[in-house]
Image 1 (cartoon, rainbow, N blue to C red):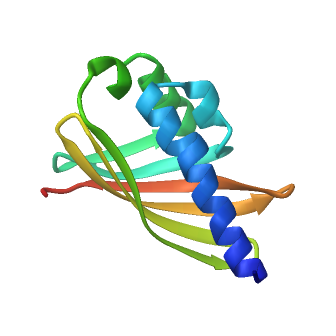
Image 2: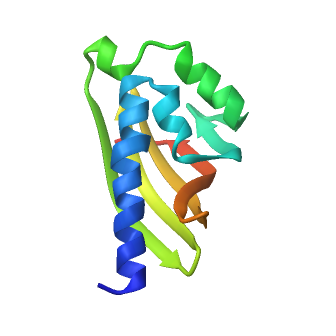
Length: 126
């Protein structure tokens, strides 16, 4: 397996183990393992601008009912992963509550770990 394939697999595994799992369970400790401390989040939710720091985002996750505890459907899906050297972009979909998020997650390989350094989301209709 070449380096690009190996890195794509590592990003995919991190998304499954930390990103989707952390969102589903509402576990900020798990989510914290995939985000770089300076991550910023941008986009739109229900047509409204969405701008948050990582701390604001994690605080929101910590203070909402998790999809797991709500008993409502949750689905995280990886659409694509592109890697060039130490940078990567994952395009994913997250369905939770009444939201269908289409997301672009920018990654950087820092100290041998793939971390999200930017999150862009848009709430789309199905």
